[in-house]
Image 1 (cartoon, one colour):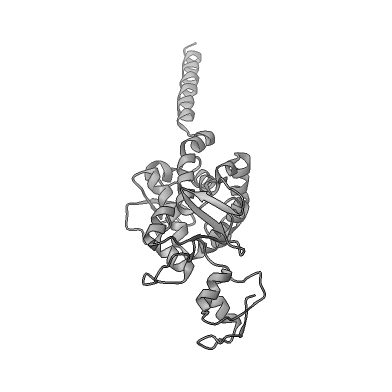
Image 2 (image 1 turned 180 degrees about the vertical axis):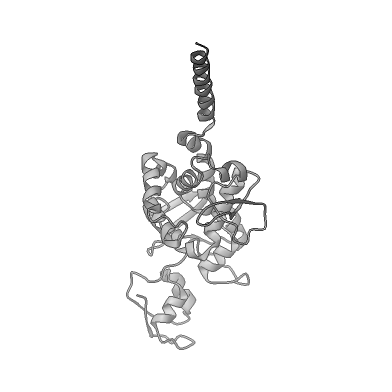
Length: 290
């Protein structure tokens, strides 16, 4: 009789213990509700789809329940790679690997964005549409973000099952113009976003207004900080393409490789590669653009 009563007590205890443990686990819905705003903020700041940020956070942190997420606030499984901050160790591809540790989850979200924008192997992703979560997912796998061969498929499944794509939608108007803050952003025929320089404006103004880093503006427009910015200049806020839809260009008087590059939205090195160019350009020369 005592054995039966004791058994009942143990069963009841285990039931309540497990109930408490399960209740402490974050659900996927709770994760999305908690961090959707952070993902959208990162999207507006760095042009990374909110759906991608959320899906990666969900997958890498197990809805915020992983040891890395709980102890190191690391929601994206980013390893140390020269990290000078606090570290945390866990088994991954090899035993006891070094991972970045953060003070807050917000720092983890910010560092995830910086990790993608500052690494050259992810550069091609930023030429994709912000609503094209499938290409972003496949691109992350292609660039080596994770070793799992099904990484892209898993991200896409998470996004579609939880309708995370709804957070990627931006307000648009006619004529291929998007409005972010009060700045008008145009879409080049070669599918690259750009802005038009205003009077007495600097790259720092544009950088602050659009939350784009200065080095990105210099790189996308193939210039340095000494460039003399003028009213009406076309300033790309995404990387230029490798080729144009237009087959060729006849050089006009006063044109340079860079001015042609800006006109067609093609990288200078790609124009140089396709043509035997003499400097300065000669009026009437025909340049191949694709």
